[in-house]
Image 1 (tube, rainbow, N blue to C red):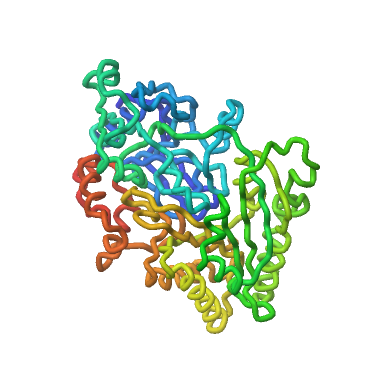
Image 2: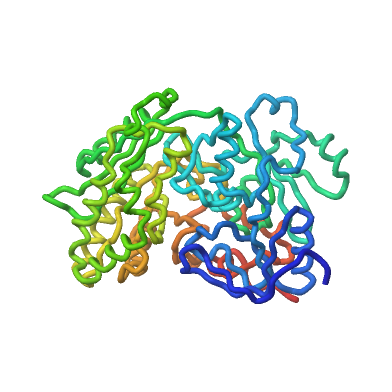
Amino acid sequence: MSGPPFKVRTAWRNHLGNQSIDPLRIYRPRSIDDVVAIVRAAEAAGVRTRAVGSGHSWSDVALTEGFLMRSDLLSRVPAPEPDFLRPAWKGRTLVRAEAGIRLKELNAYLDRNGLGLSQMGGYDHQTVAGVISTSTHGSGIEFGPLNDNAHSLDMVVSGGRVMRVERADGPTDRADYLAHHGERRTLVQDDDVFDAVAVGMGCMGIVCTALIEVRHRFHLREVREMHPWAKVKVDLLDGAVLADNEHYELVFSPYARKHEYPCLVTTRNTVADPTNRMLDKRMRNWLVELGARLPITPRLLNLALHLRPSLAPFLIETAMKALLKDEYDEVSFKVFNIGNANLVPAYSSEIGIPMDGRHIEAVERVFEVADRQRGVGDVYQSSPIALRFVKASSAYASMMHGRDTMMMELIQLRGNEGGYEMLGAYEEALYDLGGRPHWGQVNTLTDSHGLVSSMYPRWADWLRVHRELNATGVFDSPFSKRVGIVQERFTP
């Protein structure tokens, strides 16, 4: 069977090692044509295929037993695919990137060209396709998830068909596109289809390029302060902290210390170029950054928690206090990235809660769960819990679909005893408050009793588009079966 080269029966693991698979083949496509050939080869062989990026997802979202595509060679920016922009779009700041490029490399390209992403999460090793397909986000109530910055997606769907998917008023000029590609490719400009594929979790097809709206380079000032939950609660109910700051987030301990639940509040706002500022204002705490980089640090933390789990509340508060900083000014992408804390081996669940009062109740429900787990099983939360605030998205399968959302990330150190069980307890409690789990993080979601469809009001529309683009079932996977996206329907 002809096509791109591949390796046979080579194991693949994500970066943490909690997800692994032994696919039949591993490919590294270099072009859309390579992806077309791989999809058609999978269909001809009666197997399935999926694409993986940097392996940052802690869920099974990227796994396949069939043909696995590593996207690291699809990493050019600008992508070689022409844009064919309509006149109304030519004045906007747009960059088409191949979907396998990591945010780290994309940020470097943008910075060299005086540009920057308007929003980003705290980690820059994820790929463009990964952050779009799972609705990854930053924190700022005026900013939606990163998929909302993508206006055009080139993708390979079942049958090896190549489609460019956009909204009805999307950026591509239809006449120019058809004149260039003829019948070889299809331009779909339809709001319903775009809102379905924008967050497709790899189930709709293989995303190969994305046209992303960016802005001119800017700088941010980050300020971190400690406050008790009682004050933070009042601030969140009032809403001014979200309206008055471009970016606002916090981490907290689920354990009361001196009758208060400690919180570390982070604000980020645009400032002038800080090149001439004092060096200590242009860097984070160097000692914390060094400690996070040392492999022995997480080992010592896990040892301490193993020998004496009750140290957890003290260790969490100490970790938060170490991050205090009255001013950190830098170019935006360096401030968005939380730094060497990303190097500490950890995993998490993340649940999106509607900001209608239930987001406050969710925090206090977590207090209750943590206290119960401590009392009945001597099981402790091992890391601070993060809260981020995200604008509603129109994407049908986004955790933020149709509602402003507080995303709660429940982080556990790798090796923490009872960590997965604790995440399961949090997840169950937060579902009662309208919670939606992040597709790419640890979750136990199934469609038992119509759970998924009850979470997402446009789920039937998402499934209809999925059936059209995945007509042969070639993109089915253990994940899509688990969450009820497909039944066992693939026939070799």
